[in-house]
Each structure stands twice: as structure tokens, then as C-alpha cells.
Image (tube, rainbow, N blue to C red; front, side, top):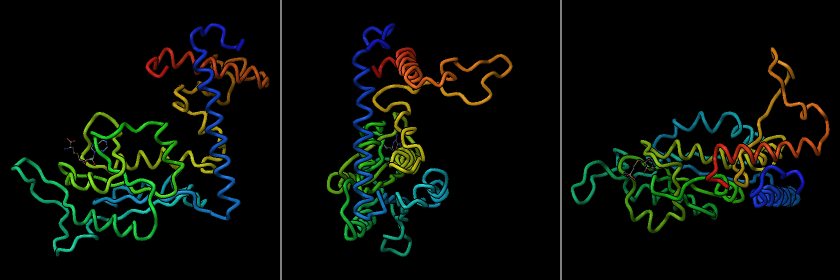
Length: 265
Ligand code: SAH
């Protein structure tokens, strides 16, 4: 561990850095199995929302579009109002107890989840909620290994708690702040999950060497020109010496994590 000199106390992080590869191997073997079995679709995400138009553009652009074009993922949007039985297509009602605000009703949500479950088995039925478990890279990694997941977007004061007790298997927050609805949380989750499916980003390694994979921030990146008005790219990156470049990358990751996010170490 010669190249860790100058980073005393970071030996632990070296093993974390190396652990990154066990995850990569796991993904790769999963990927190969899926190809060998002739399966094309890796993952299906069903998002239940009262505002499908808010997500329509997002899930059909960029990485999510590419993943779907390559048939590595499918993202389906379900308008909760299509699962109501009344002519006003109501999804909310007044809260018991006389509290302020409105609450999302049980029936449409249950109808929608039941209809989806009749078609396939789901690994998780996720509810987006500020009091849920905090979404992070390890959670994205775990969720990306699933085949089918549902993400339910809340609105108003939230959903009738009995849905959470009986139908939801995982509650997820994207941070300690309150959004108007769960759509942005579902978008954040879908993006983070789908981009690490093998084959979605052309250089698979590039997603796996991003920040937070094994609790390290990424090293800085540079492109041409090597010298811009005297602003120079670190010499080692121009050396072509692979081992030295890897050593530099690890040193940078450790140094930046220590300086910017010591809580990760
Ligand atoms: N009354 C709730 C907040 C409701 S906000 C409370 O105090 O906890 C309305 C909806 O937006 C929530 O049901 C949830 O689906 C979504 N939402 C808001 N903030 C979120 C966050 N940080 N993470 C995930 N979803 C969130």
C-alpha cells in the first residue's frame, strides 16, 4: 500500500476502494446472466402519480431514454386518477381528526397497486416520503439489482397511513426538506438507479467510479486542451502510465473526501 503514503489512517478506505470491484463484478455477472438467458429487459420501474405529465419528458430524455432505447430498462407512468371509480376522479379527501390539508385516499392507490401486482411480482413497492429512509448511492445500487419496482408519489399532506402499513415495502426520502409531491423524488431515484445498470452508460466503469461508490468522492476530471492559457492538467494524466494514473486517482479521491466530506470516512 505504498501509494497510500501521506494518507495515514486511510487504510480502511483502500479496502472500500477495492470493494468497488466486487460490486462491479456482481453487476457484470448479473448482466451476463441476463444476456445468456435471452432476457433483454433488465429492470422495470412503475411510477404511480397524479401528475404523469410532470415526469413524461424526464423519463423520455437523456440516460433514461437511452436505457429504454437499449431495452435495458422500462419506465411506466400510471395516472392515479385512472384508478378512481367516481366521475370526479378524486384522489384526495379530508383528514379524520380535523387536521389541515388533504390526504390521498386508499382506493385508487390500492386499485393501481393491485392491478400492477396482478401482472408481475414486485421486489419493492416504494413510497416517496420525507420521513423515509434516506436515498443514497448504496440504496441506488441495491435497487438497481431488482427486476420490478413500484414508486408511489405522494401529494397533499401525504397518503392514508393504512396504505403505508399494508402495501408499501419501503419508504424513501431524498433529503431533509419537504417537496410538494413525490414526482421529483421518483425522478431522482429512477435516474440514479437506471444509470448504473450495465450497458446504460457506455463505459460501465465510468458510473462505478463516480462519487459515493464506496463512500469516496470522485477524482477531478480534465479534457483537452492540456494547457489552457497556462491552466495546466496534472502532469501524471498525460504520462500514459496506467498504474501511476490509478494511484493519483485514489490519492485525489481520498484527499478530496477527507477535505470536503470527512463524514463519509
Ligand atoms: N405532510 C408530509 C409532507 C407531505 S409533502 C410530512 O410532513 O411528512 C407531499 C408529498 O411529497 C409526500 O407525500 C411525498 O410523496 C413527497 N415528498 C415531499 N418531500 C419529500 C422528500 N424529501 N423525499 C421524498 N418524497 C417527498
